[in-house]
Amino acid sequence: MGTFLTTHGSPRHFLKSWQWKIFECRPKTILVVSAHSEPSDPTFNIIRRTSFTHQPVKLVSCSLSSSSSPSMEAPPQGYRKNVGLCLINPSNKIFAASRLDITAAWQMPQGGVDKDEDPRDAAIRELREETGVTSAEIVAEVPYWLTYDFPPEVRESLNKRWGSNWKGQAQKWFLLRFTGKEDEINLLGDGTEKPEFAEWSWMTPQQVIDVAVPFKKPVYDQVLKVFASHLQSNSAEQV
Image (tube, rainbow, N blue to C red; front, side, top):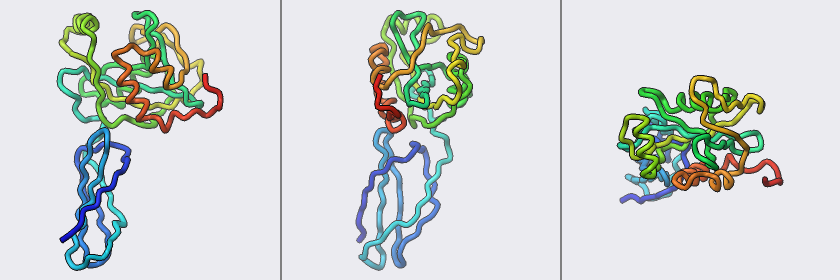
């Protein structure tokens, strides 16, 4: 007895644990709802168990909540915790800047997460430290960690500087909308950290990927696909 119905949805966040709240259905029918999700393909499996009737039923309302923030999920072992920042302007162009230490290398801002620091707090802090920007709001978040491995020469250099043995970085990415004026952008940052960037520009998603160093391109591609609905150009002009 009973039938199985699988429906695919796109929840805002990948949630670690589910709590069942409300079940409403036609009389004489029992609904059991479970949620199983993979980060790249969230799927809800709705199982209908019919105790007294075989007539179709409709799930009217089911509220799911989580006891943990997606920002606080543990990253893969062996990777340094890091946040990535996709800052967009009113035209939905993306902020990118060239590194001082690597010739012709452009990137979106990013930075390490301090011990016991929430990634969302780290995102706001890193944005201020690297770009001077304080007028921004978080719009969306990639609900899982993305990783990249350091090339051997980069790994050796960074681990020597950090006194560590990380094989790469695990990044939590945030989409932020810039709400200030461009004269707020200051590559000297807020003065608390050594400057990292030489110049900056607003770019299309494809331009951001094109100018990124090779070992970061796969992560950038995934991030910009997740945020694609927020990155539609507001103008017919493509720069």
